[in-house]
Image (cartoon, rainbow, N blue to C red; front, side, top):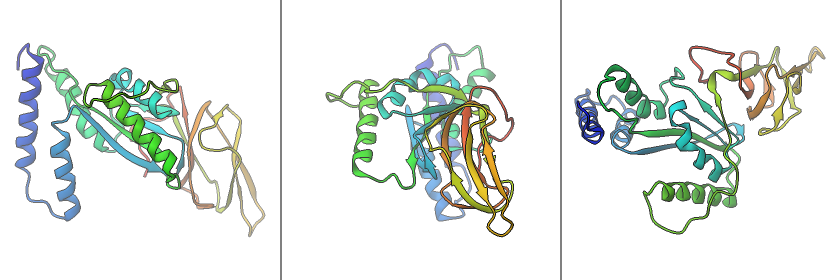
Length: 253
């Protein structure tokens, strides 16, 4: 690899494809589909991994180095928060596409290696957010972003919203039920919260024990669990904050 970033990009993509072609035969239909997706994605300039969370505001995950390029998409989609990390520890699909470029650029600093795969995971709200107006707005926002990047043509509107804040994924607080019980949420996904704000109650109908769970960080309550009967050990709410609280594996199951 040398001083030509385009030549380096082509060389690395060829090596990635060769490595994927050399893998042992897939052991399941799912594994085979995953490899097909990765073959398409590893040579792409932009990768959008679209999902939905349980009950959630729109949010996205990306490398911190890519956040300036993603700000426009966050404005087009009215995303509420971007969670940024170089390695979330869960082998997510977007990081499988973007992280190799960052690692190669650091391993070979003398070569001109761009971060050639702009990849993100986007949570398009919650599982119940299936309305046509929402879906159309999401599709139009994505197409407008792709037009801005020069991938498609057409006359697309400018973002109707401001870009959201990019926050460290390490600053996400996961809140759990301290005991079994019926869950009553006191705040909605997408709300901005402060330290000490009550987020939900857990009511045990057998013992009459009632626990109120409060935020320990200020930020955005970006996701809550859909189930309304809690068991200890399962997350019930996620708050994105500015101060790092966790390290290691950041993704939750």
